[in-house]
Length: 421
Image (cartoon, rainbow, N blue to C red; front, side, top):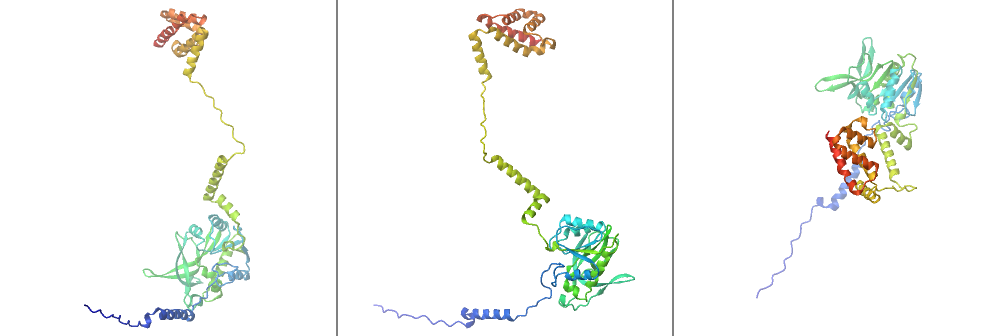
């Protein structure tokens, strides 16, 4: 007899450290994240707000100061709120880094205005790709801005002070312009930038230039920061001086004084915009893909009208069944046999023989009657005299059935003789 084993109790588990307990660790981590979010200092830059370079904006990144400065200097300023450019030799068009890209037709109109004797101030960017391509320019890498100083020897760049709050205590960094083709003969430089490259060292590149185009003048700037309100208010970089020199350059050199400065605000998304229907109609009528879509829609409408139900049912097509020619031959033969129409049958047989044999008997006999034609055949072929006589008799009088039966072989011999010769 076996004795039962004593029940064993499991050993007690050791308590877990507090740092691995979720109920303790997760609240601590959440509290630390909240404290970091509350007490971490946030660096707020001085350049904030609407980034559009619009003269209607008084924000730090706007360009209302350029408009007011031009007014104080005697310019007749205006803001254009609708599409298109007013071409006149006394006007300077200012297109400042358009938020809405310029279309190809608008770029062409702007360049034609300059070539005809007008002038333009353009700040290039993402919306002026076609204009840059037409001018053989592209936006290059950035560099440290230099103030342009003019003297008797020309122009030279002078270092700007570094303690500028707009660029967080550093020297202004400006985008530069690079020519993709030989530049014009005379290029006026208003702002420069020093670019540093490891392989080639420091190079000086322009960031705002002016040059003649046709009978007019054009000023191109690569960086919109040069004309913003916060940069124009700071006298240290001298961007305000560069802007004034650029406007003076555009005022001169024309057949008539250029005294009107027209700012393009339409491409800054200001002014009246076309409605949905106007935009759709413009797309369908002005662009190649829109015209193709309109043609496909019109073709589909015509197809729907053709396949759709009609208010008046169409008339059914009437079809007339014609008997087979072979059936007509049998019917005519039975009809001729019943009435004894040997003359009619003989006439049709002789006509068929003439149709097949006329090519061999000469054109001068095709205008003859059936009897005269048979007489001509007998005179040409005396051996066919009996057969021709039977055919002429069949045309003239009715024949008995047995005699009429011999007409077929006689005509066959006549045809064989004519076609053989």
